[in-house]
Length: 265
Ligand code: ADP
Image (cartoon, rainbow, N blue to C red; front, side):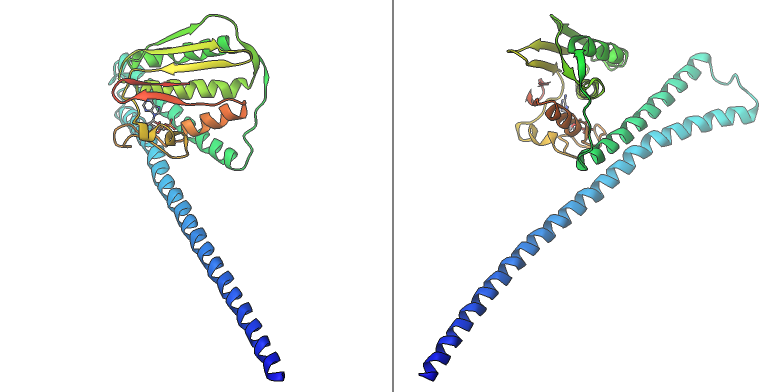
């Protein structure tokens, strides 16, 4: 009888051991997958740092070069070495490079705000139509220069509660993309009421288009559908844009055909 009790106890202990070993195996698998996720995150961060440094360095190098050119002229004591047009051109270029740097740093700050849940939205009563019209007007000169002149269509006032600064950021991001990827063809910005309480903004270009495979992932952080050697960028604009749209209770999507153009809604 004693032997039987001992055998039973041994069996129980065995079962418990097996259970523990299974649990151990499970946690090992979990640990492995967490490790590979972590490795992937570190890789993404490293890639981002490499691209971001490159993106920051390009406008800085250009600004430095322009400053050096001026310094050299000053050293020679010849302030008339450049014609007034050339000086204007250099100043315009410097301003552009500085704006590019500011935009890059702002985007990087927004990414941090989003990942720490600190992207705040301050809604106020505004007319979406006027806001968009003004944003389009501001970008018009650069868009014309890029060969992608904008046409703005809005039939009526569209009043609602929006964060003026953030919505302007959405419009700017979509318009600058249409300008950069728009293949030197006109861009149409359409704002309309669709159903009650819903406004729909669309930015349509006739540029390079986006392959089906990339049409969803471009809204993710760091995702791009083009080679950075062709058109530079960090792949942050659409991610930030999507976060802003979502925090206003909206959604963003794209319809596009490669070689024909894209419309972002
Ligand atoms: P970035 O333009 O800096 O890469 P975005 O997040 O704004 O970052 O865009 C992500 C990617 O989506 C771009 O790299 C590009 O491949 C694609 N894309 C965005 N807008 C357009 C557009 N209007 N036409 C074609 N491709 C676009």
